[in-house]
Length: 238
Ligand SMILES: [Zn+2]
Image 1: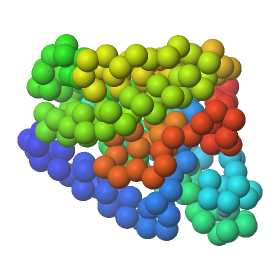
Image 2: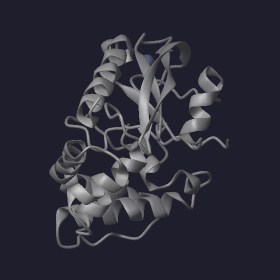
Image 3: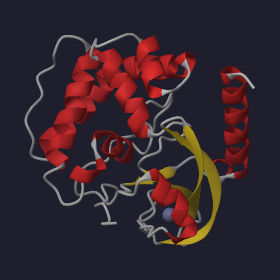
């Protein structure tokens, strides 16, 4: 099987699994600041110490309801991970509970996406060498960079605001939206790293957690969770 064919079959099975998953029930995923390595999370299956946040729709209590498995790719390797589904006992909505190393609707881990986007958007190199280093197809990496650039101004403003809210430095917009977004994400993470548990997650799990996995999603619904709200969950120690 050629690399392109393999990518195609991977994505086909990825989305086939998603069809059976919670997205058919609810488009809302909750991303929790999971500190586990991908392998450790995959190996633990249903025994991961999942948090139980309040319902993002109505703040009601959530109960574990079911779950599904999905693929995630890190360093060129695919693993299947368990994603629990929570159901609100008050409003009946169900929500997938994704670990922060994932991004919603993306096969590759947030860290891989972050490295590629950083290299390209900071002007360090083109998409092709960044994709090769990351072990992802060129077209996949190009898609990430396009999405990131399209959202860069919005991301920059939002993460700069989050940095200030977390007690960090104000971020002056540098030349270029892409660099502004990268600088702002870095500043917000630096500020969050002063709070218990966040530092070990790294900037890209942090970015996935606070955007509900929609860092480079095509459509977003109020992606910015602020400190003090129930959705800025503290990480759970492993
Ligand atoms: Zn609810």
